[in-house]
Image (cartoon, rainbow, N blue to C red; front, side, top):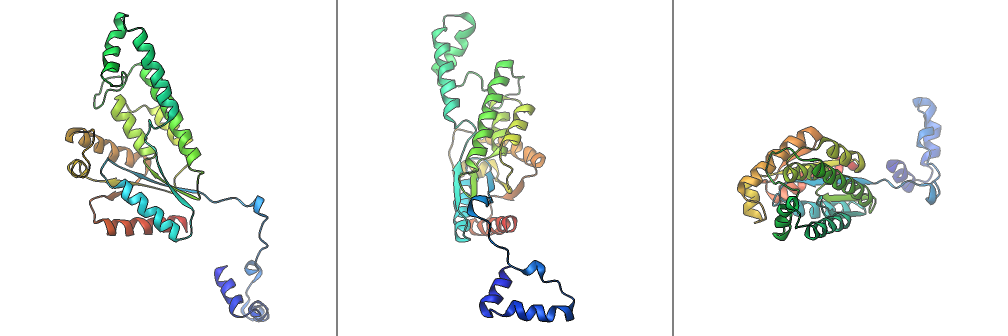
Length: 265
């Protein structure tokens, strides 16, 4: 249709001339006729989600910012959203209430161990890096977090024509597996079902040593290695595109921009 508009701009009689020549070429020009634009209130906005995942220090923040800039230049209304799995006010409020209840009943023998964790600022359900079987309370808590996270994904996906997520479904599943010591199949499926389906989901894969060198975070080298294993495992299960995050920044930006353009055109 853009070629038709360009031809009409150059020669307003182009359609009339084409209709005269069409019988000789056995061409059907009905599909070329411009359609009347639909009223604004009937038009559906085309929205898309682009998701970036990876270890802390993998380059997500730089690439999400670069992707947004490229999308804006292409005429899209694009926004960047940073959303770790526990970054939700309702999760923090419920956690604060639970911690207060533990402090109230810390005299109960079975609650004393939890009170020591709370006093140390730690989660009394998380078991980072462990492989023990989670209990019922842990499963209920993780399922609640998964539902809240999936709903937040879907809500924020409507904030612009193209929303670029810094962390998405893949990160949530990996963080659940690592923090609470199980895959939580139901919770993982809930996040996938509730979250908007991304047009493109990218894992920026870097070795743990590179991630730690770029960003001194809460995780040590062994913890980052384990998280990277989980990222690669879950990325294969979810069909996420894996890119080398150690590639030169400009080249990686160009590769990602081209991939996004192909998905959205």
